[in-house]
Length: 311
Image 1: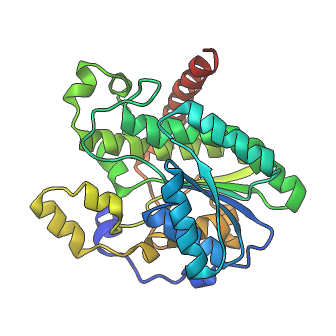
Image 2 (image 1 turned 90 degrees about the horizontal axis):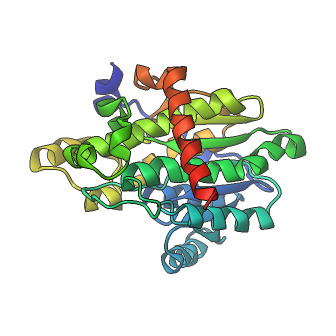
């Protein structure tokens, strides 16, 4: 049924958080881990004995969530402060992690931005694409050595799970002139820029899989239509809200597919795949699989980082 089925006809989950294996000795980083799907993912990783870092922008908020999780599951995550809209913040967070840990089992790129904002990142890029794609690219780049060491140290490939959205299908191309301030960006609706950023997540995940698949597992996923604080803060119009909320699930369901991708033994085989609710391999927009599209995005991302690091 394609996108329509992915939205309206989601089969009952056959794998849930209860099926997460024992994660003792394993290390995880979850961006956006202080809220919504990210928080639920952190909770279940902790429940199953993982060592987990909440990567979030606000230290006080992240610490409050860490304190809540101690009461809920009896274990506390580490707090890693990172603002994905600032490459300097991303670099500092990665340096802090790498000073503490030698290996990383999974990086779950769940954080991001949405909404009507015309703001830009600290480096001057469109806030939505700069946060959702560029920030996650740089974090992944800096944590890649730890992810790759996991295979040699523990016999398990490190995993990178990029949380996209069904919205990526609504804008399955990247208008590069809209990624910086100017008339082209001003003319592009925020919803289209959001869809573009979610398409960027897919393209990034697939290109990472092509480049590093011998050492890690990289996948993209749609977590489902989930009731999150981000949704509440960025509700669409009345009709769209009614339709979405009629098929919406709570965050416990939203965490299923990220948890499966990051922990399940069988998910070792999903490199370069797009996952759909709940914990199934599906199909992304066909444009996302094009190696030339991936190469072009990767070149742009590398150039952004090169420019930043040369300053």
